[in-house]
Length: 166
Image (cartoon, rainbow, N blue to C red; front, side, top):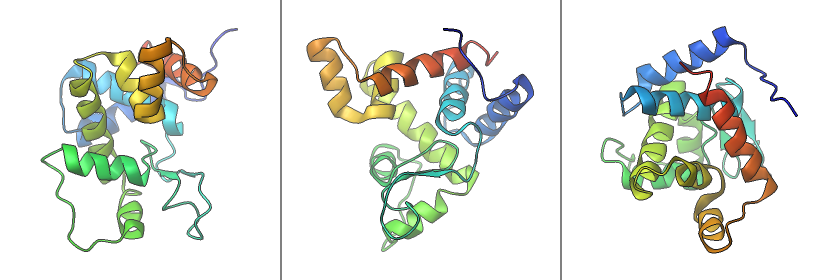
């Protein structure tokens, strides 16, 4: 089955520019990967809110923004990335609302992806599995060599976009 791309080449170039401006890592290969993740996660919808039934439109239990960050992912990024300074006393809802700003969203998403690459010693597959499915999915991959269908499709989608982010 041929890959389909909801984003045109021009839209993908715009995603690459956006992540390049706001990323914490300026390495060109990292920026290509980050743009591919952003395109796969949100199809360039900077205000996307997906999942969650928390009474706040999914903001506290779903994923938000270009990089589709969850509250858990945002908190992990704050913990692992020294350039992110959590605001003392900031509520979870306020943090998630702040992540609707593309600058904060890309900064947090790039911190998280950068950390996952460091954690996995540069293994892109493992970093993508972490970004999409968390530590449980990575443990499953290492122990059994298998991934959920969702994570398999995610990795293939990112790699398809990666080939177009030149």
